[in-house]
Image (cartoon, helix red, strand yellow):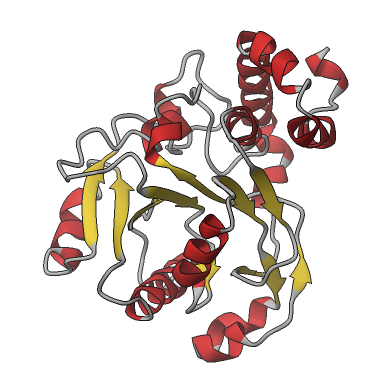
Length: 276
């Protein structure tokens, strides 16, 4: 079994909190890889901006578990422009791994997490176990642990109980499903970005699951910077993209609601009045 774990690191000053946060994430991923046996391979697919590519190439060129790919675009190229210019990745671009140039099998698993999501050492081992129970596509909700633990060793974060979080920031699915997904210019780091992703996961699964109380991933604090009013036009953009995807897939949604296993998820996550 092969895993392709897609993340979006970005170059920041090494004295900044964001650098420490990214380092914690990457350290946790590489630790989890070391827990696997030789029959399971993990490739950390780093999708980075063209400007940041040389930095990460120099940093990870000797790491056999890392594959670097360039992002093709960002939110600053969307028209009309937003009130505050930001170069945020777009979900359809992030998920495009067609140029990876590796022997990918349809049954191989893709993992997508935010850049600030850390994982437990047994993360990939547990994903295999979950997959072997018959769940073909699933999302894992993180635990939110105290922000001050970011200055401590990872071992302290691993054993911090934290609190449940309702947001979705870890998706696991086979490569075969990725080809079917309707993913558009959903802007990362902004609300509603993963709701269309979640919809696709439910529609194209055989046995979908939300694992909302397993301690496999965690996040330091819960700042929710994206809720700042000055980014309201970004939020509206993502909301409109959700409406587009929902309307374009209405026939699939109606059919899925005939399956009680899928209907319960659709009713839970897509009861927004603006979806009609």
